[in-house]
Length: 161
Ligand SMILES: [Fe+2]
Ligand SMILES: [Fe+2]
Image: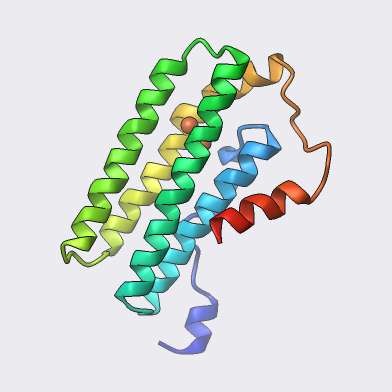
């Protein structure tokens, strides 16, 4: 592959407004997940090697668990009525991701087919699950935009990195 075609490689997931839940804090966490997934895609596309892909997959799994914990805390604090369902949805997503990791650990290659599975997994989480709680959070006084700039962005990026 030439450098020319590398630089024009389309990201696996392109952030767009349709993925926004209308709360910046949550959107920024979802963008970290999108970036990790795109990083995994690049690692596979450019043959960075198995170890690099496994490490990125692990960061994706770790960050996903942190993100879900944050969402579940907010749901409990704000008294979200559909908390139990949403938590179950998270548990299914985590177990899907873990079985994906186990297959890779057992020797399966990370194929583009598996990457597409992860892309659907992520967009499904946002569009089927999270977009349902955001109006409730906003009604309960959640701030749609960060009141204090920058440090939270750095905080989440550092955890992911
Ligand atoms: Fe989420
Ligand atoms: Fe969620």
